[in-house]
Image (tube, rainbow, N blue to C red):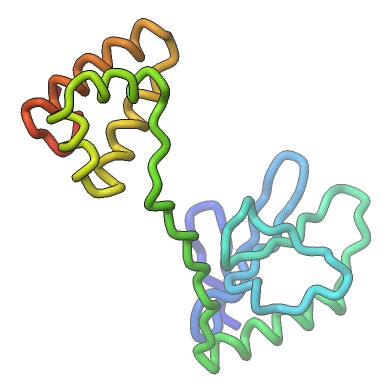
Length: 164
């Protein structure tokens, strides 16, 4: 394995990054690149905050260092890099084609038939752009202003409300 000096994070490589060493106030982290391909029978790994590929072993003051397990992971991670194995990326769940519309926005849409028809003809992503923009308002008065602007944008046949 070859040491690689990255900014504040020493890394060790063998046909690609194998492990990074990261120091924090409360712990030291051994982060294995493609760690999700490594076996962890004792559940020692942390999932790195939801990172799909990396796995980290966090060592705190007084922790017993699992030297044999670390060595096994380093060997296996090196083999994974040699073989060019890549973890499979998780596919994001498809967004629903049904877009929920707030009661206030729906009430305003129903007041104008052509606006409602235009809104209904939009793609789900365009409908979501309107509904999320309106629903993100924290205050009720802001929400009502956005509904009014959204209706005006729909009258002008704008697919998205961002320009209004």
